[in-house]
Amino acid sequence: MSVKVENLTKVYGDQKAVDNISFSIKKGEIVGFLGPNGAGKSTTMKMITGYLPSTSGSAYVCDVNVQDNPLEIQKRIGYLPESNPLYMDMYVREYLEFLTGVHQLGDKSAIRINEIIEQTGLQVEQHKKIGSLSKGYKQRVGIAQAMIHNPEVLILDEPTSGLDPNQIIEIRDLIKTFGKEKTVILSTHIMQEVEAMCDRVIIINKGNIVADDTLVNIQLNHKEKSLEEIFRSLTN
Image (cartoon, rainbow, N blue to C red):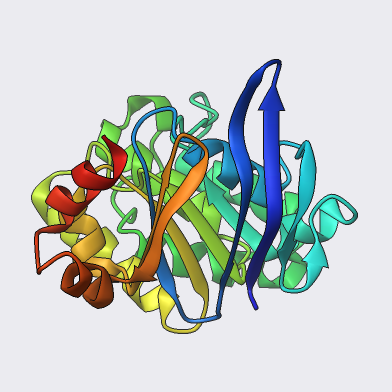
């Protein structure tokens, strides 16, 4: 399994943000990880990436225990958090060069930078300061940083936020291409994005998983309602 979560729990004081959840994701799956605000989505993703320690339970990426091997996990995961933190005073290409150094890509750096700039549509903007870019192009830079080291697992929190309709289609196609050979966990509030990209849906509510199945099966089991209607019924 590319990603495996076993009895994962995160407690803040008296509140269980994530309550003993388990799931696994195979290579080549694009999974929509859905839930209302405060449901535990971002907390779960941060625990899988190693950015946040779990209270109990375990997470594995490509059979590597996240808490035991955090540096190894960083090689295998690409992560775009919802906040999309970037170095605003750096130029786009300069920032990507910095990241290839962090990931120790060595002689492959120049080729990889050119590839990722083309894939994310940053050719025209590559010599501009990140702080001067539109929100949509900043989001593309965030996706580029998540993919620069060619990770086996890509975790994206609201990846199409701020993009115009044409940009959404381009990024959607990029994610689907990436997902053919790798693993993608996609968190979004835009149900059309899930329907367009995802093979499977996991819905979390109040720290508990309330649905985990293929998109087709979930809709069949709910009398072919729209995903938005199903989501509301399971999280209200």
